[in-house]
Image (tube, rainbow, N blue to C red):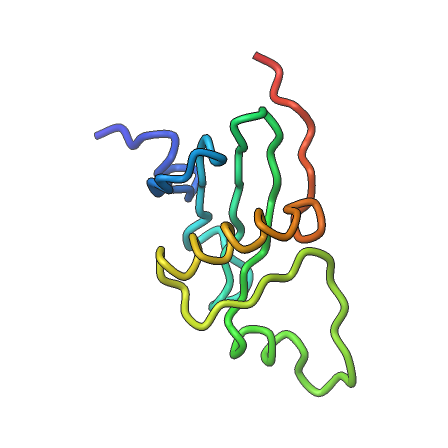
Length: 110
């Protein structure tokens, strides 16, 4: 049985029902380095794509360990890793300017 590209790549999409978002892909295990985190690929209707790293507070504490600080671009916290919480985080980032939270990706050559 041949698996889809989405399954092989560890990505799945969720329906956003948001006119600003063309697609929202979520990285699923085993592609993750830390439990309690997800990488999201947000493709906007204007063609831009951004990657966001979403963490639970527990995952952030695990990354912090015993260090006095943790610095990383584009960190977004969620209470839990549910589709609803992830979508809420993306919509909130869009409302505040996605550029502040996500990393802009180069255009896809088709």
